[in-house]
Length: 154
Image (tube, rainbow, N blue to C red; front, side, top):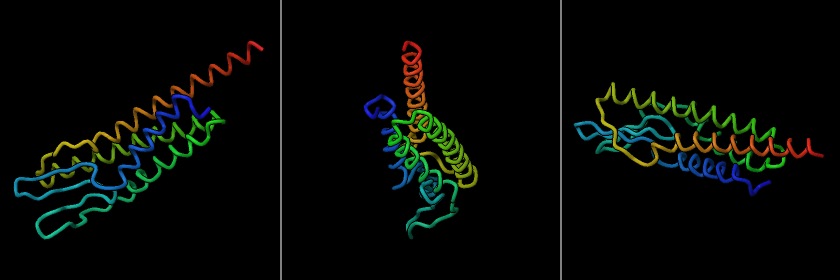
């Protein structure tokens, strides 16, 4: 059913992953005043002259597009718990890959540009996506077990 708790968790996952498409995920600055951003396109550098793309990351783009798309599709497959579980497991895997990519690029920026992290709310979105996908998977499993127990009683 669409009004189950896993729909709520998948909706939060969809919204938080959809917000990653616009803007930067993680922001860094060095002592010279240059800013480095990890965003949808990859690593960008920003100084007084403007914004330039340092490294483009196609896997990051694919992950940021795939996660909200799969979350939305998973919400729409509320009648088929088996497909919903598979899609949610894919979301969990892709969100782990997203966390690894963002962490790796953060490491590269800190190491090569001597930049420091500027804390922001969007840097926690990949973790929020992972936690909400795990909670959605747990809710789907509970629903499946509940339906199996009712089938045994008949």
